[in-house]
Length: 260
Image (spheres, rainbow, N blue to C red):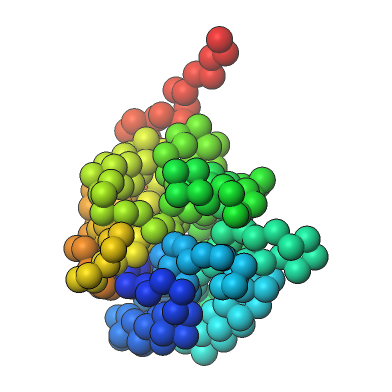
């Protein structure tokens, strides 16, 4: 399975410009014949313009339609980063990732569970309440978004029976070292492939994102890693690394669950 990360630069609140950027990067990435494309968190509008109600996608319809058509037309699986989704039935807003298969079928969606309170995300978004797993090209996958990365017990449960963890993010340059350490560590801890797709920065950004998207194998080896700006990175996954890592260091078998 070949994975390509679109580490795009998002302009705050400029949905049409950002959609054009996504299509440009997608066309470039497809030259390498990837099986899966993944985008950053909140790529349509950035993280996040205010008031968010003026920018949210009602029921995710615009984003879902675009990504479904793109997946079908290009015959590629898409992990759709995330979008601010206004749920028409309740008026609540979620930070939502959609997943599409090669036929353009929506096969999964995930509402971000852990909302970043220092950025007041929790004041305008509704927290998700469920894990998200799905099967892609015969392999069990899981989804987390950005701040979820910091919650080890959540990720331990999520990764208990998956092979790949997809992680769209809008992680700031201010805490770049945390991003690089945690993404690689989660691959080692949970013995899964981690595909971490962050946004890229551009000169003049007031709050630049860290970039440094990465693809890591279950040993924590770096298969691909981006710099700080807009970039596409790709890697071919060797799934024999899963069995090798899990048999040589049987963390899942040896794990003890203690209660205080």
